[in-house]
Length: 345
Length: 255
Image 1 (cartoon, chains in turn red, purple):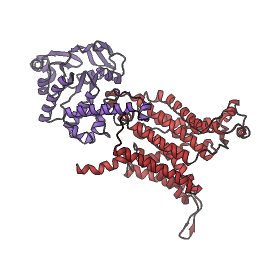
Image 2 (cartoon, one colour; image 1 turned 90 degrees about the vertical axis):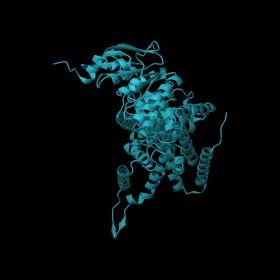
Image 3 (tube, chains in turn yellow, brown; image 1 turned 120 degrees about the vertical axis):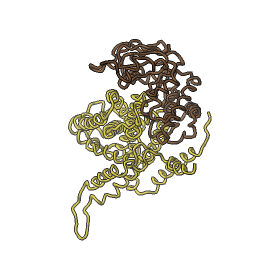
Image 4 (spheres, helix red, strand yellow; image 1 turned 30 degrees about the vertical axis):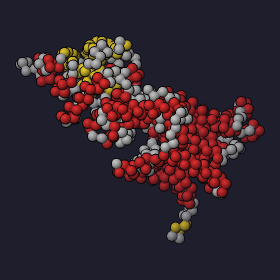
């Protein structure tokens, strides 16, 4: 085994070390509100990086995150809530008996949420990837709605529109940040392997990829299932952070927000997905004042909830008009340095 | 015969694109498939590569029927192709374009790539070295880190052939390789293809309109017209053949 510690390895190790130090520092010294936002950012980095794998890297326009995040969240929640807490919160109908007996520790619950999502993604990919075109977007959009409707209409499992409450608050910055780091490393390792190359080849020119002996069906399925796996885990972390979940949380708006993130950051760039997350999630906290009553030139406006969303929609339109590549384009962090030295050659 | 087309017919609805065509290509031969526009040449390519299923007949490669195989499986059997209009992977570097050709030859699993196992590192090193060798052979190794689409047209054509050779083919299908090239580029390309035939132990089947190029390159040609074979033999004889001239220029003695 020969591993040469090149400059790239050095930079990568340094970035991870800084991230780990930041997590440690933030959980010790930042106030609760800031830590909460950082938790959100970490979870959305997991979601955006994995969403980018199917949408940006493989170029298959998909609208799936809300469905898989919901599945991950519900599976994790059902495994984490203690039987006692379950007993009293099913108000509409009595739960199925097996629901009460489900219980596991946090890691197993997260992994099961991820695997369950990935399994459903595999079932979806069977019919969808046999044809080309925008069918994936239509199917995944419908899938999200079906999951939401199922969550509302199977109160024996999900407690219907009341949702699940009293989920133990396992998520903290070590969990969310740690899993975010692992997710980004795993996804970058996939992208920088023959599997990632095959995915990019599918995005650039599917016919040419086939002519190179690439099994494009397999490449797309791999990207989609990996995406779904991490979205399931992200959903589990979200459930354990919010401590209560309901079907309303996982509507199309959730996917839309992630779409803004990856388009802003640059479709196809994992670095872009991280930057996009920080800007959009951080920015939407900062823009909270827009939703509240404002004092402008002596007038006081009424509270306008949803005003932030208008700003984000406008932002998306402007990106599409003037900066279609997003912040990073398809480049990654280290390529920024490369392009600068290109002129010297 | 490395490739045998056995009475292949292809219908699109009511249109017969290829009509009971049969020919064979011998190992290490450069075989030209020529004919006027709409003669069915590209359809024949698409049948060999598995993109179209023949209505009747079968294709044999190394005495093995290709019936029912998917296009990517046929590539893995040893048939590589280039496209009429160059189709490189636009977001990728020249090296990555060639590395795609090794996709099915790199032996490591999904888990091994995530965990960066020694086998992953070794295999990546191996296929990168092989890719650089191929690029070096085509004299474009110095562009390996540049974006493939930033290269000149002639160099892009070389990248496309290099990429096809990365799949380690026994049979190379070239769809109008000289199209859009100036005479000196065409000549250089011809030399490279001839040289590569020996060095990579290749059989070449090419479609081409440039008769000078065909004459200079091919050991044997097959002329198609309206899906039917009208001539098979030496290229120098083809240009003298009455039926071939009629197909290209029209029948002057008709009325």
